[in-house]
Length: 210
Ligand SMILES: Nc1ncnc2c1ncn2[C@@H]1O[C@H](COP(=O)(O)OP(=O)(O)OP(=O)(O)O)[C@@H](O)[C@H]1O
Ligand SMILES: [Mg+2]
Image 1 (cartoon, rainbow, N blue to C red):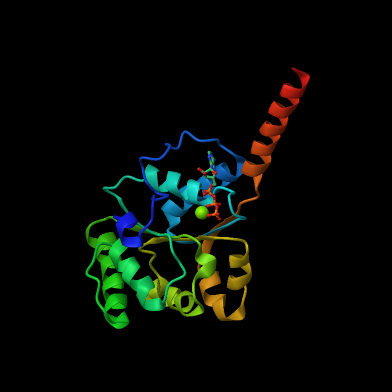
Image 2 (tube, helix red, strand yellow):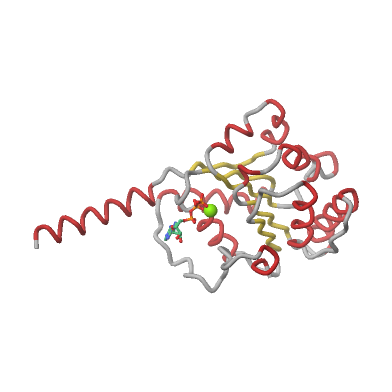
């Protein structure tokens, strides 16, 4: 469904892709344990790292591991969108009607998150990939969107993932309130790439020796 909606050739969250019998890199382990913790405490998680360090892969493994009777995953792969497009894609991901006006979308998204969590006991897991491209207006709205009952309740798990510049963006004064709501974070340190290069290096040396 995401593929059609976003016009993508493949969905990085497709369960048909290689299962998560993956290389358990240090980054993967660190990200996974934080994601497990986020399952318990709910709220906002932040994952950053250079391209190719395994952010999307780790999030996909996490999403795949969730019981669909208990969690509703909404994955938003494109962040280079307008505020209205962002709300529409979030509404689409949460399986609700896609209204044309932001106010209607906003209200319905909040109601859907509360009804899933409170009434159906299904925790919404909203994953925004490539979040470094999110417009300031969207980032500003996020803290309001997830402001339930005066902040006393976390009804959803919300994950922002993106390149390291996302840390700089969130460090700006204007995003202080959003930053304060981040309960877990991990910066991928490239050990996938390092280890793959080390393996390649070993193979190369073996070839030279042989
Ligand atoms: N732990 C892992 N085990 C096996 N393969 C992995 C692992 N982590 C990442 N990969 C593979 O490495 C490639 C890059 O990973 P991924 O797309 O998750 O990076 P990314 O950090 O999301 O990059 P970008 O910022 O460009 O989106 C993918 O082909 C992915 O399948
Ligand atoms: Mg990615």
